[in-house]
Length: 150
Image (tube, rainbow, N blue to C red; front, top):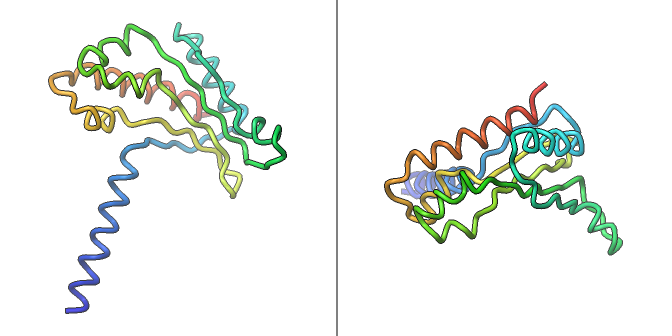
């Protein structure tokens, strides 16, 4: 009986972990955090996307005498892509414009993360807009892969 309870408990923990992980897509970068963020910014600008903000959390932490490993968020978008998503479900606007997080972990590895469009689809119960979700998925995947790869 203890084995069964342990197995069920471990299965629940593993499935919760998998569900939590699927809300973010994370790629390891071959570049420093700053280089990755710079590359991502340059790529989105070259594609005609709008850069709304680049937030350097490490720098902001330093202004109040706190330390933080390299952590930046880039907020960007394109109304040709975002507007159709909001037309599918206006509540999706809370997740727009798109954001990527670039950060360095405790082992000096650099990661780029973004919200999984399928998570956004589920979060807002978006129905009948698979083409829009697929387009957003492909754009985010291509931009991110280009920023982290050598």
